[in-house]
Image (cartoon, rainbow, N blue to C red; front, side, top):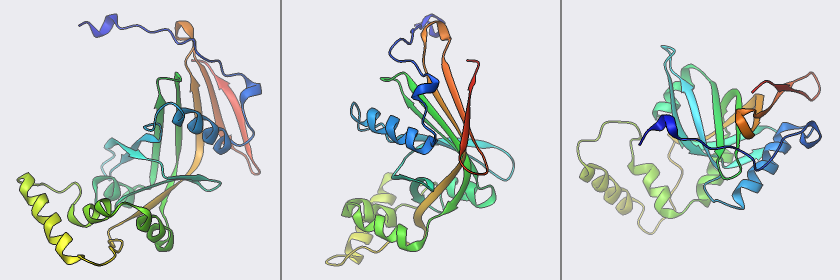
Length: 210
């Protein structure tokens, strides 16, 4: 297979100024809901962080809330992404929905959610996921799979017959956006790109060359 020969023309939608909302968070919410109608994986977003040495790394996480504050996701605070955000709280996320021929980029400052908000979300998770958050030393080296399974067995015994509390090393982050880009694929690589940047009160948007 030749990767150079892979071609696809994007012809499903257009993105006109009249399609753009005054608030990019509302626009992202509309695009996300439309994408979820066709795939439950649509809430997956690629999160990029940068460590103290300036080295970037990316991974897929799930958006769990979107409101006027920004985008919320949850993870282990001692993970690679957590360590990066501790020293450099600037981050970026990217949604890609190939079935809609769309993507959205969001950049901004990341901060931890309150313990109360993280507690509430953790309590809503399936019990197996709650136990897994205790069992996994996320991003640490594991010698064998048995090491994880033994840790899970120990946690199951520890909380047998009890509610599982949120681990102190696990919780939510809020990405407070200061940059959005909405991308709509178009034929002949002449894509539509709309960028939002904040004003003192509200947002302004402009079109970019593809």
